[in-house]
Image 1 (cartoon, rainbow, N blue to C red):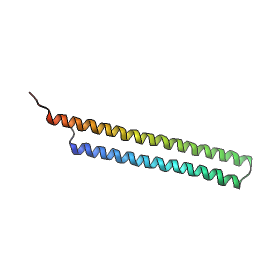
Image 2: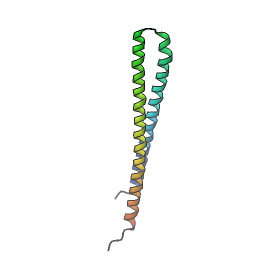
Image 3: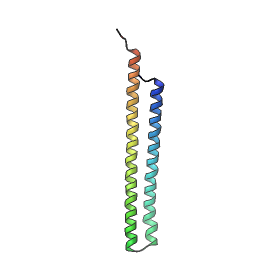
Image 4: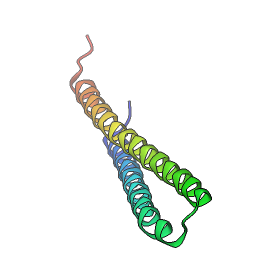
Length: 104
């Protein structure tokens, strides 16, 4: 049986890691969106050729992939936090039951 302090410590750590992961995912998504907007507006005005169109298309695909992966990471962070809360509640209940258990 884990102590209450250990349960709290593990929950706090997982919650912190989940928040960091969510923050990173949001930053990656913003970077992908900002880069895509920059690519669409700046590069098209600088270059006018078939190669420029191909390059811009590949860059936009990479940005879309980055945004998609960032959204996936954000979902993982949310699931991580949800599971941590469930585990915390289960461990606290288990600890509470263990403290009132009567052996005959």
